[in-house]
Length: 284
Image (cartoon, rainbow, N blue to C red):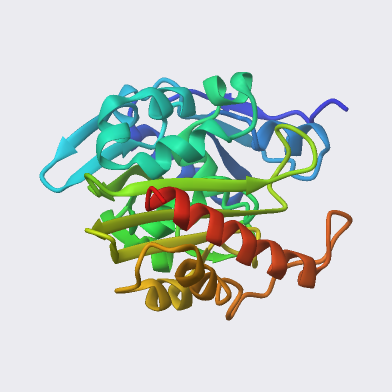
């Protein structure tokens, strides 16, 4: 299907993009990599008057260190994030999640910030960002503000980004030396996950000193597996101990039911995948 007609703007600065958003309000849409927006436009599920393409704003690309954090520009392509040595060293969970994200073409066109701003609960980046405690830097007419991952994802395809605001970068606390694993279950290659688990673990000897867990497609937003994290704290890195903790994976979750599986099936999968992800992240 052909999209409805719209005007097109390609600003070169964040300020220009914000001015256009302020002028056109909810009649404007932001275009990042386009992997989510373009299908919506083609199906005419949305018909904006103006599309604002952020592709020429070079300040929104790149990865750098800033003290105890990595800073990932919102317009940085997935392929760059997935192959970056800083990400592999300090936020390996993101590197491993990107490996599972769609296909090569999408990873080269899609952007890190665009996927997170889209906030699909079945997307592969929300759970790792939540587990790592990422912070989202958002620019608007009144200046810049920072929102923690716990407060960023508000609902189905809904985030803390206002209609007149733009996500500019994502700050990820360094988890240097932590083990990590992204365990994803699909029936068809490159499919959205039926369920996925993002796990990163810090060991002290044979004991789990700290664990952080994020769940994909187990609710209207990415879900933090806090019950599992608490159950793992101080436990030995053994199959039995991790299995017992992983039994809490679905606690507090409201997974959807669809053609790929009902809610109970997803709850079962969450436990299985959490056990696998934690053991792999812990090097067991």
